[in-house]
Length: 191
Image (tube, rainbow, N blue to C red; front, top):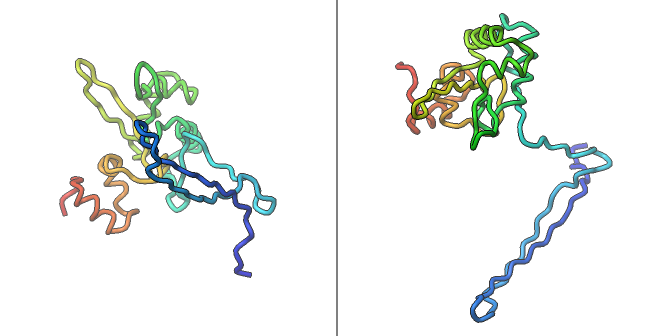
């Protein structure tokens, strides 16, 4: 019973014609055929791809024992506010991508500004979140990043995210990956 299921496919034929606009001469024609899985298949159901945003979790990495169920729920809520594939809690606004402030993070999870500060400090203590101070001209912006071991918004671990969480990621990544990041110039703890 190791036969591949007969999956409905959609065929797309594309023809590109290159034309010299000054003479009208056809310089070349290129055709390409692509196949895609149908969005709905009677045997397999609806192909439901997540749109932008959200994060994935790794079942083999448990939450810290000291993390309450309430804080897990708060972090799951915040994972829906990760900006693109950066793992930063942020949004588009005011002419660019902006990080959420601690008080705005509190609003997202139903906490007062004081409660939010305590929550974020607790998450930093559990190595779930890291805050980074980034200077922008005459002001300093605090950016909050979520540890990719718990919620990961991309398909690839970036050099920046690895550099930020390399100590936490150390025991979870294969040696060859750590070697590749070392070649790329990530500073890790001395051996």
